[in-house]
Amino acid sequence: MPKQSVVSKLGTWRGIHRSLVVLGTLSLFISVATFSKVYSFRSSILVANTFCNQEHSQSQSMTQIQVGEALDKVIKMIHKEIQEFENTPTTDSLIKRHTFLADILGLIESVKESMPDIQLNPPINQTHHLLGSKQLSYKPENHFLIEEIRKYVKMKPNRLGKQNFMGANGTFTSIGHACFAMRKDLEEYMDYDIGDICNDDWKLAQKLMVHGCDPLPRRRCFSRAPQLYDKPFPIEESLWKLPNNRNVRWSQYRCKNFTCLAANSTRKGFFKCADCFNLSNHEMPRWVKLENPNEDSADFLAHQVLDLKSGEIRIGLDFSVGTGTFAARMREFNVTIVTATINFGAPFSEMIALRGLVPLYLTINQRLPFFDNTLDLIHTTRFLDGWIDFVLLDFVLYDWDRVLRPGGLLWIDSFFCLKDDLDDYLESFKMLRYKKHKWVVVPKLDRDDREVFFSAVLEKPPRPFR
Ligand SMILES: *[C@@H]1O[C@H](CO)[C@@H](O)[C@H](O)[C@H]1NC(C)=O
Ligand SMILES: *[C@@H]1O[C@H](CO)[C@@H](O)[C@H](O)[C@H]1NC(C)=O
Ligand SMILES: *[C@@H]1O[C@H](CO)[C@@H](O)[C@H](O)[C@H]1NC(C)=O
Ligand SMILES: *[C@@H]1O[C@H](CO)[C@@H](O)[C@H](O)[C@H]1NC(C)=O
Ligand SMILES: *[C@@H]1O[C@H](CO)[C@@H](O)[C@H](O)[C@H]1NC(C)=O
Ligand SMILES: *[C@@H]1O[C@H](CO)[C@@H](O)[C@H](O)[C@H]1NC(C)=O
Image 1 (cartoon, helix red, strand yellow):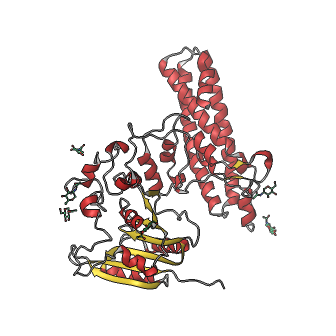
Image 2 (cartoon, protein in one colour):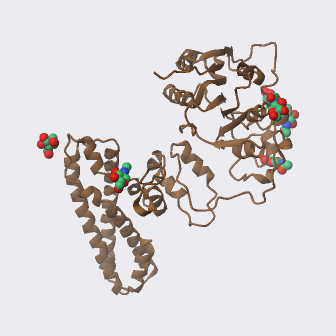
Image 3 (cartoon, helix red, strand yellow):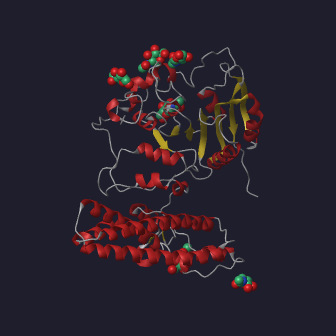
C-alpha cells in the first residue's frame, strides 16, 4: 500500500508559504497530465504487442525513452514537493492536498515499475516479428493498478523450479481479454478485503462476463449467501415444486419470491421464458404432451427423440433459457442433462439447483467446458434465435459439433427468426452435414406472419480419421 506508507511519512510536516501551495498545485497538474498521457501511451504499446504490430517500433521506443525521462522528472518533483511540506503548518486542506499528491506519486511509481521491461528493449528489427514480440514479453498484470488483479494474472511459477505433473513450469491463471477494456468495472469487482465477505455484486460479475470479461478472476473473499438457508426439498419433491424463497438472494431482481416469478400477471424484468417458473401449468406438459396435437408444431416429444437412438442417449447439455425442465424431463428417461444458464433477470441458476438439477453458469461467449466427442445430446431452445450473428452461430455450431460424439444428437427446438432470414440460418445448420431425423419449419402465428419456427433433430455422422 504505497498510499499509507507515504502518507505516514508525511505525518510530520509543518510550516508552508502560500507560494509553495501554488507551486505544489501546479506540479500536481503537470503530473496528472503526464500521467494520463503515459497511460494512453502504455495502452497503445500493449495493443501493439498483442497484435504483433511492430510497424512503428522505432519511433515508439524513442517515445518510450522520453516518457521514462518525463516520469523520472515528475517523480523527483513530487518527492521534492513532499519534502518541502515537512516545514509547513498542518491544516486540513493541506493534508488533503498532500494525500492526493501521495496518491498520484503511488500511481506514477507503479506505472514506472511496469516500464523497464519495455524500456530496456533495443529498437525492434521489423523483419523479426516473432522474435520481437517475444522480447517485449507481454505481461497482463502491467495493465492493472489494483494489486489483487495483478497478483491473480501473474504467472505462478511452480515451487522448487520444476515442471508440475501437468508438464507446465507454472500456473497460468487467465481472464477474458475484454477485462482489459472494462478495467474500471473489473477493478471495482476486485476491490475487497482478503478474507472478508465479498460485496453483493454478482450482477456486476455477470455484466463483466456477458461483455466478454470471461473467465473472471477468482477472488479471495467469501461470497454472500441467503441469510437463512433451508435444506432443499428431497429429490422426489424438488423436481416439480417451487423452492423455498429463503434459499435465494433476491436483492437484484424485480420479483422478490418464486410466487411472483410463477404468476402470469406480474412484471418480472425479463421476457424470454416468462412462464418458466410456472411449473404446474406451463412446464409440466413440455416434451411429453403436445399443446394442439392436430396442428403443425415445432415441438417434438422426448420419447420420439430418444427412440431414434434407443438406450444410447445417456448424457447431454441443454443450452436454453429456462428453469431446467428439460433436464427434469430427461431425468425421468434416465438421461443426465446439465443446464447452461445465466441469471438473466431471475435466479435461474438457484432455481435449477434447488430442483435437484445441475446448473452450468455459462455465457454464450465461452467455448464449452467439455472435451471433444463426449456428449450424447445437445438440446437448445429459446436461446439461439434470429438475433444471433451468423459468424457467431458458426463458431457455436462447430463447438457443439466438437463436443458431440459421433452418433450423438443435436436437437434444435423452436429456433425462431424472420422469414427472410430463414434460408441463411438453415444454411448454417446444413453446413454441419448431419443426418436429418426431423426437420420442420412452422409459421409463427402471433407476429403478423413475419416469423417462423424451425426445429430439427440431427445426428452427428462418424468422421473416420484420414
Ligand atoms: C534486421 O534483420 C535482418 C535479417 O537478420 C538484417 O539483414 C537487417 O540488417 C536487420 N535490420 C536492422 C535495422 O537491424
Ligand atoms: C520450462 O523450464 C525449462 C527449464 O527451466 C525450460 O527449458 C523450458 O523452456 C521452460 N518451458 C517454458 C514453456 O517456458
Ligand atoms: C411475493 O412478492 C410480491 C411482490 O413481488 C408480493 O406482493 C407478494 O406478497 C409476495 N408473496 C409472498 C408469498 O411472499
Ligand atoms: C400458472 O399459470 C396458471 C394459468 O395461467 C395460473 O392459473 C396459475 O396460478 C399459475 N401458477 C402460479 C404458481 O402462479
Ligand atoms: C399468460 O398470459 C398470456 C396472456 O396474458 C397467455 O397467452 C399465456 O398463455 C398465459 N400463460 C399461462 C401459463 O397460462
Ligand atoms: C430408469 O432406470 C430405472 C432404474 O434403473 C428403471 O427402473 C427405469 O425403468 C428406467 N426408466 C426408463 C424410462 O428407462
